[in-house]
Length: 104
Image (cartoon, rainbow, N blue to C red; front, side, top):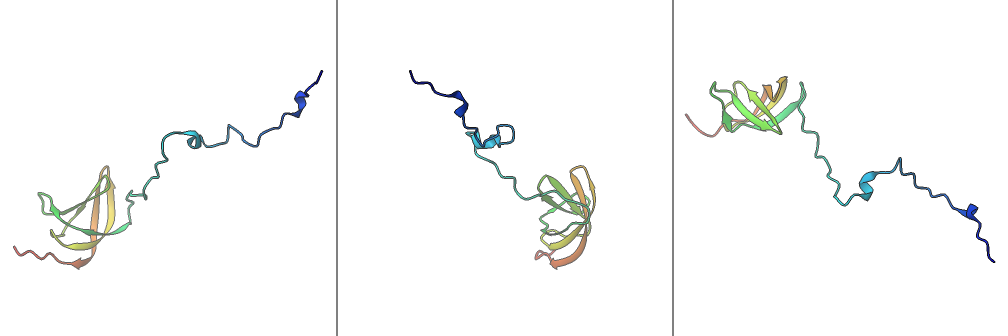
């Protein structure tokens, strides 16, 4: 009779409590895009194509709406974010890079 020792069990190097569950998933890994959140003090270069009812320039960036006073439609400006409240941000024109081509 042949006896097999049960003490020859090799321990694996894999620890199920510290391993990535995604490795065993059938779904692909979704990489998050760059951080699109706005912070007070951020400087952005934007093209203004929309004007609100008060005559302020409006730009949509991600899920935020940036309102830029004294900006004309069709111009390209460098804007500094000065205030964020909910999904609306207020920007201040730092530099006008190009003016609008349309005449009023």
